[in-house]
Structure formats: C-alpha cells, structure tokens
Length: 427
Image (cartoon, rainbow, N blue to C red; front, side, top):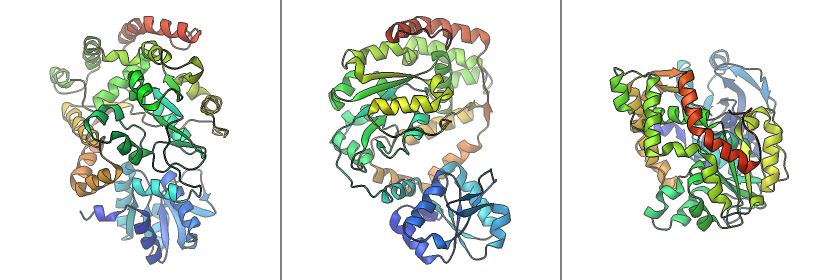
C-alpha cells in the first residue's frame, strides 16, 4: 500500500498537501495538469507553482503565464520542491521514475480528484437529477468515446461522469438501481445544464431505454462504415480476451495471425454478434418508439473530417447554445493493436473482468476497491502495458470483400432510412 499512499484522492488531501509544500512543480501539461493549475489559481495558491514540467516538450511554452520545461532539465535545478504528477494512469509510473532520479518528493493526482477539482471550480448551483435530455445510444467502435471527450468540457452540457455504465446489464440484479445510477453519475449536475449520456450498449435496448428514460429524450446515433467498425470491434475483443479466440491462437502456435479474424467473424455470424453493426435494424426499433424529430444519425467519417460543423450540429440538436471551436476531434480509445500472443490475450481477459466487476459499484466502492487492492491492480495494469502487442493490423482484401458482402444489405437499408446514398463514403 506504499504506492497507494502516493495518491491524492480528494480535495481535502490535495489542499493539505498544497498548504504544507513550500514550492510545487506540476508534472503534466495535459487536461490533468491544466485542471490542477486552474484549481490552485482558484484557491489563490498559484504563487507556489515554480514551473510545469513535461517528459518531452511540445510547442506549448506556457500555461496561464507559468513556463513549461522538460523534466530532465528543470527538476535537477528546482531545489527542495514537491512534485504533483498530474496525468492519466498509463503515464504515471514512467513519470514517477523520472522524478525519483532527482530524489524529489511527489504525489499523484487521482482520476477521482481530477473530477472533484472540476466540480469544485464550478460556481453554479448543484441541482438534483430530474431526467436525461439526450442519449447517444450507439454504436460500438464508432467514435463515441471521442465525442464524449469533445462534449465533456462544454459548460452547458452535463455528461455522466462515467462514460459507459453498462446500466441495463446490472440494473435488474441490484436493489435501488436508479438511485445507484444517479449517485454514481448524476450527482454533480449544475443549474441550467443539458443532461445526457453516451452509452453505445443502449443501441440494442430500445424498449428499455424508452421505459426507463421516457418519451421526451432526444436520441442520436454514431454510425461508421460497418466493415471498419466490425474490424475495430474484433481488435477490441482481442485486447479484452473476449469472443473465444484462445483456440485460434493455439492453432497458430500461440501467436497472433490475421486468420484469427476469420474465426471471430464466422463465430459472430453464428452467434449473431455481428448484428451490432447492422445499424438500420436497431435504429428502426427506436423509430417505432420516438418521433423522427427526436432521432438524429451522425456519420463518423464526416465527424472526423469536419468536427466543428458536425459537433455544433449535435449541440444544436440537443438544445445547447455553445459552439465547438476546435478544428480536430480529440481521438480517444483508438486501440490500434492486438495481443501478440495467447498469454497477452489471456491477460486482457483478466483485466477486462477486473473492470467489469465495477459496473454495479458506486464511485466510493470503486475507489475503495482499487486502493484496497492497489498492488494487484497496478501489477495487472503494468503486465498488460508491457505485454507484446502488434500494431497496424489490417484485413486482407479478401476478408474486406467478405465483410462488405455481409453488411451490404444492411447499408442499403440504412440508406433508405436516411434517404441518402452511402456508396461513395462507405461501399
């Protein structure tokens, strides 16, 4: 638990750390680092910040008037400072190793604290949950995580703290499921915010969505060339040790081969999991429950090509008056790799199962679970991080033709539904 003690988990522990430190270096100039700096400014402690450091300097030179330096050049010269490591988990350990080279004291900003700081700096009145205004209900591997990252910073929009709750997978197994959902993801709504969720698993549960969220909610979908979406789904399933690929690995001597995709695809036909990307099939089920003016379909490829126009169109649809000003969409959850061998594949399943066990837990329970099992948790993530991976895997031309043939009828059906030809954009 020694490393667990390095984490600052709440505002109280952060404030105490800031008060006790004579000088502070912020390690990280991304969202975590900028949020921490903004927070220290809000509590009038910014004078304690003697610099921002990064592992490798980009074009940014400063933030809020505070200079950004490379860690290897700044840390040896900054005296007896306290380093606050502010970055997402995958970078924290490497950053700590850099800090340790210079014998500096340090603490990590936890994911939970990052969210708490964001809320703490919002001066608008907290309001109780009274329902959801919009839902992005699909589809898997169609850019929903990137869209979440684009909409989350917009002040007039409140997105659930946890992007994917898996709600309909566990709600029937626990008491007071609605109360748990509200406490977990809807307990920080500010006055005047438009409330929504981005939850691709909802695409396959139209009736449950209608019964739980009501008939007034606005529904929109992200759709992508189903061939590319399905192949991305295959890679995700591989990284998470899902969909029975173990035998296929064994047939290939324990190493990944693109032929494993054929095994996954044929199994998907048999078990009907490839239906996930037959968009029209699922959209029509929503159209039977909601009027057409409450349903919007967004094409992923156009979202990537022209994010300003498309995101602003989404904002207009959900009733937000703000504008999205960035020319690029934040790319998230790309995962362009597969596990190189069967050991890595099995490790992916262990990690996936670890996270899946948190679906029906409250945020406090998740926090306690992770830090009570810190050693197990970090060792598992480190093993997965170091496991051999293969990047840039592509389908063969024959495989692509096969998948296009499978989805052709579904695409033509979607074209009819949206009154638009997609052959030039997709196939």
